Every structure is written in structure tokens, then in C-alpha cells.
Image (cartoon, rainbow, N blue to C red; front, side, top):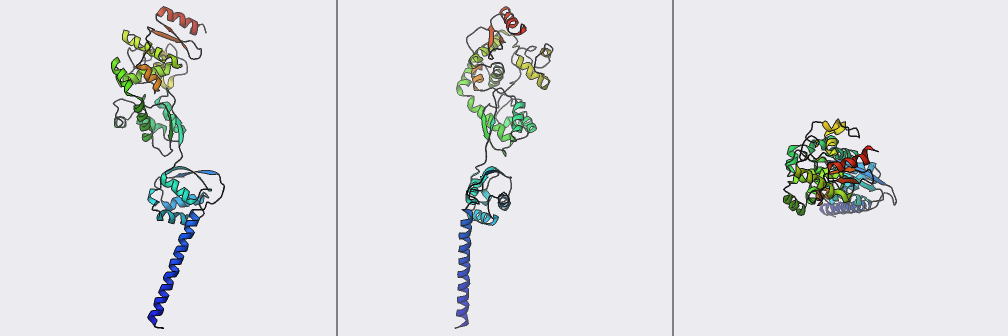
Length: 339
């Protein structure tokens, strides 16, 4: 047999063997990435860091017992061209998932979400503490952004603080969400809830958006019963129209900040702060909390009543409303002093 023919046959045999081995490798890889490590397994929370490479992720999954071997995972991801598209975040994974299923979750960014509930009437400081408590962000960073002029302006607001504009709701967020994105989400939710009907009613009353939100925050802090929101709104509107001081305890508490000990004293009512509505007439310079939709609606739709005073009855959060100071003083003696 000529030497050239023997070489050709050898080369063909080598190519055939290489193709067979390559095919065998592909089949083996396909089998490995479509078979889970276990039929049943507990769920694990895996944090994929920002900037983590494919091999680093594969090693992390292997060490957690979620895949048998890193190499088939890496080869499969490269073959599917998914390597540069895997997303960082917190994932709920299990060894009962195949590597291909895990890879699909990482590609689609199906990260774990946490419920963050912002209650109506929460302050910026309270919200910052809730965010930190959930491990979602830094308390200090939230407070900094909440009064950062450049960041606030980027949200389309011309106010000194985001106090009042962080809409109370339950947000489903991820741990790798940064503080700026989280606050933006809350402000955008406020925007969606400050509906055209509110704008129209506010214009009819001659109120700016900032005035509405400020007034709504006072209503939010004072009203415990939904049925009383519009009545409390009417008291504030009536006082403003008459040039009376609002004398709202909640504004004094806000002015005191961390110095508030749980009970207002007469000395507290003398604090020199623009938020002290016992000393200064009109609305305070800004919201004292973040009001919900019901209080915002009440701020522009006060009840048609002539009340000028209210005092808590200490019964189910209800208040006694009065038109005159004489009647109010009797109610104070009945519901507060005598107790």
C-alpha cells in the first residue's frame, strides 16, 4: 500500500476518533447538565456577586453541592452563549434542579425578592431603618440621598427633602438593589398615586403639590380612623383660612426628633422650630411623614364642617371635634385631664 494512502487512512481514523470523542463529550456534557445532583434536596440561598465570572459562579455552585462538576456547566454556558449574560443577585436554588435549570435562572435573573413594607406615616428616618433592617441597603446612605439636592432634582422634584414623597406600600425588592434605585421606586409610586383628580382639586383650593403633601402628612399622623381623615383635614383648612395656628402636636414631635421621649410636655411646645405649629402660623415648611393615598385624598377634599379643634378620646383612636374653644376645653377636661 502506498505510503500516501496509509497516511490518509490514519488521518481519517484520527479525525473519526476525534469526532467520536467530541460527540461523546457533547453527549456527556448534555447528560450532566440535564441531570440534577439529587432527586430531592432542600433549597439554598446563593448570592452571586456583581462582576463574578462564569468559572467563579460554577465553582461556587459546585462547592454548594448544586452541580456535580464545574466544567460541564462552563462548557454548556459557553455553547449556549450565556456566559456574559448571567445576572448577579440572590437566588433560591436546589440540588434537585438540573445545572441547565440553574443556568436558565441565572440568565433570566430570577432573583429572590423580599417584601419591604413602608407603613403610612413612616418618616424618612424610619424608612432608612426599615431598609437597613431588611439588609437591603445602608441606613446612612438612604438618609444622605433623602436630602441630596442633585438626587432629588434628578427625580423631578424641587423640594429640600424626600420626606413625604416616599409612598407607603409593600415593595418586592432584591438585596442587590442600591439605595438610589429603591428611593426612585418609591417616588415613582408616589407619582402614580398623585392622580389628575388630586391635582385638579388642589388647584381648586389654591394648593401646590408640596402644600398638599405637607397637609396630608399632618392628617396621616393625627387620624387613626379613616372616617375622621376628612374631618381632621377640615379643621386644618378652617384654621388656615382664619389665620389661626394649626397647633398640631405631631409637628412638634417631628421638630423634637430623637429628643422626643414619648409624651409631649408644655416645655416641648416652646421649641423654636419652623415645624412647631404652636409658635408659627401656616403649614410647616415640609411634610413631617410620608402620607398614604387616603390622607392625600382627604387633604384636597375636607369635610364640610366648621370644627376648629379636636382632642383624642382615647377610645379606638377616635377624636372629639369642637367649633369653639369653650367646648374644646370641656372636651380636654373630659378626655384628657380627668384621666
